[in-house]
Amino acid sequence: MASSVQRWSGFTLLATAIACAQVRAADPGSTAPADSTGFQRPRPVVVQGLPDGPDGTPISTEEPFVSRDGQLLFFNTAQHENNKDLHYAAWSGPEWIYRGEIGPGINNAKNVQGNPSMDRERNFFFVDSSVKTMLRVGRFRPETGHVEDIRDLTGVPPRQVRLFAQKLHGNMGVEVSANGELAFFSRATWDMNGLALGRIQASELLFTRKQGGQFVYDESEARRVMARINTADLEYAASISADGLELYFTRLPATALASGKIRSQIMRAARSSTSEPFEAPHAIAAIGDRDFVEGPAVTPDGRTLYYHRRQGKKFRLYKVTR
Image (cartoon, rainbow, N blue to C red):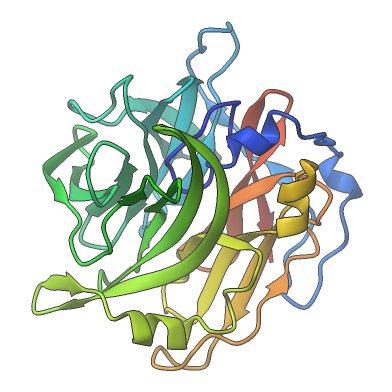
């Protein structure tokens, strides 16, 4: 959603709507106080050493993910239309230090590479609009910043183009659980303008489960577990806690999308065991509902939640703590 183009990554796919949106960049301090979720006043996340983009200002920071050991911060950025790239930073004392682009040969100017996620074994998941499933996985090497043994993520429904109906169904917003057993994704529907991608129309959260070393998609089970999550609004960009008992995600009201006045919320849902469905979600009041916010990412200890918020023409990272 970072610009006036249609994007394939987990949280920035509503760009056509944003082209006409009237987004108010409120002071984070003016948002509501902490609620039952326990999260408090938002604070900006500083990444030291960010390079400048084509406009001469630091690159946009979007779709954050904090590694399972808390030492790495992954994110993506939009350099220009249809070019979203993966980057990362490392924790050093009291701040994040930019390390560089993730490579080799992952980022390219023709497709979107975004929405990073990783399990404890450093299996690295991300969105790549160039492949049929739109999701890929490899093994991250922290000593080099490279992702190796990259392959398409199987066990998810493939991209489906319906030219007669002028609809496209596809995947975005991948999130792997800490133990690597579940991969959440957003199944979305877009309008098409001939052969070009139009505005997003719907999105729901589902997941695929690893069985015998391979991911296997059981749609009925995914819908059972996510029954209280998915609504007529757009739900996307999942983040799962280390114990699998808390789910965070973005909810964009369909009415806001239709009006072009984009306002979204970061939601939290809980459950008492990993075999049960999630309970009805609640908005995180500290973040509020007046801004365009997306991409929650909970830290390994569950005490901090990162997300991005529109700030001028770019997105910047923020966090709330409890």
